[in-house]
Amino acid sequence: MSDTELTPTTAVPAEGPNLLPLVFEEPRGRGKPPRHLADLSPTERKELAENAGLPGFRARQLSAHYFARLVDDPEQMTDLPAAQRAELVDKLLPRLLDPVSVRTADKGTTVKSLWRLFDNALVESVLMRYPGRATMCVSSQAGCGMACPFCATGQGGLQRNMSAAEIVDQVVWGARQMATGEVAGGPGRLSHVVFMGMGEPLANYKAVVGAVRRLTEPNPDGLGLSARSITVSTVGLVPRINQLTEEGIPVTLALSLHAPDDELRDELVPVNTRWKVAEAVESAWHYAERTGRRVSIEYILIKDINDQGWRADMLADVLQSYGDWGWVHVNLIPLNPTPGSKWTASRREDEREFVRRLEAKGVPVTVRDTRGREIDGACGQLAASEASAG
Ligand code: SAH
Image (cartoon, rainbow, N blue to C red; front, side):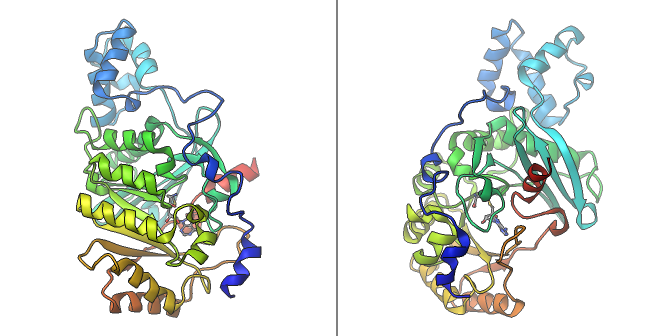
């Protein structure tokens, strides 16, 4: 298939109604998720407790239960007076995620959860255990407004932004599963978080940065993860990448590039009509330069669409125009086809040639393993099949 045949098959208007106008919009209508201590700074938690007529130090005790002991059952919070427990939990630790299904794959080392939020919105997260590390892949929005044609989430548009606590609670759940030994391999520690579930994290900037702060603050105020072990993945919202650069939190930035040329990227990542390849790559380079963190370039390999050898050369040239001082790393992802998609993953030999050409030009490259295929591992597939079933 040639590139020109792409246009009729994708059916994504470059300026579709659910795309650009929603990029920076706040959640609309239908009320907000219940407020939770993970939405608040430690000082704000204390104030909230005091305003409710409860002693301020109780907020810190609750934070310790949540972030350090990973307890969510009020019965186990025996240092809180029984008479105040229900009220404290109701004020600061309301339940945010209701499990619809929890499925495992890869001999129990991959756990994919589908959650129902307070307003019935569905989101998903995936816990992946590897030797020596465990990664939680979280959603940051219910749905997504970016409309990338290969992505299951992109097909349904944006429902709403998630709150910081709704994001954090996915991670705390994963940390609890690891700590209690629920995941195959015995008790362990959740070490990494990737914002690669549903949604565009930088289109929900405030909540995502709030969540990152909660995840990195030391116990008992936060979960105590290292910022370096958190990856924020974006389609390339350039002003927000620049804002993140100034934020001073050294998370790992991943840029979903998927094509080195604007003509193809306009189709694969429609927001490219607003911020071009060169602008997105330049802001990512600036991020690496300022934070000292190596940027990850995500590149899905789609058979006969973006996997040609000349595109590998072009990708290397685009990245190396900013120097070869190790600022960047390419992560190739075999396409996980969404139901009904005409696109498939690249042939093995084309994948190998793509890797070879990047390496020949000195660009560090890895091919992502594909966890959870048999449980609808591709972005948004579980929520999409649940929504269509019910
Ligand atoms: N909106 C953000 C984060 C969510 S998607 C972003 O686009 O980066 C996380 C990663 O999964 C992105 O690199 C995205 O392009 C990729 N992805 C989405 N659908 C996929 C599919 N069907 N197969 C393989 N990777 C997919």
